[in-house]
Image (tube, rainbow over the protein chains, first blue to last red):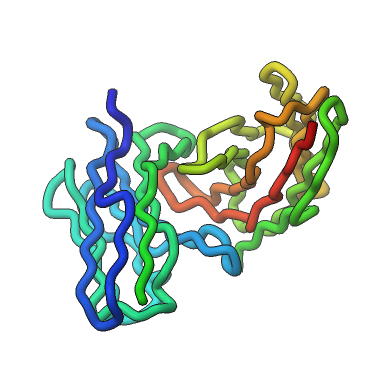
Length: 114
Length: 112
């Protein structure tokens, strides 16, 4: 299994531009999580989906952030317009249905907004 | 609000030392506590703990949970430079497939 796949791995963009991050969860997993990691705040949950349905997006910082999961094998996190304070590493993780919650993380996307 | 606190935030030790990393938590409907290791990339799973007093062991790493005092420790014996990483503690509340609440991590540096 290829594990969780994220793209791009790195992105540098200018303030005001739209950014789209992509994630392919592990096949068969029914939950997908988007996290953001910074030195100051650590790892924070942004939003998560169960069976392609958004369950909790209370961690999404502002309306500039949006996430979709059109099918079980693909999700996007969009930032529009981007700001320098959005610079962080964004991780996608997935988990399968089980009694307990071992999440598998993708390699992350390092975003730098100038 | 659910909370996970790790200590210390950062630690530098020499190869061969033994280290203990701490994780305390406050969470409603606790189900499990997980430890992850994060080197340069994504966090990788180490242990999942659900019951008090039962030690989980993998090589030089071991971990134990105390559900009465609401904390866990991660021990690493005979540390090696390859153990240098951020160690993250996370807690799962309520039923499965819910978000994990992460601590900010302990950055461990092992020097030769």
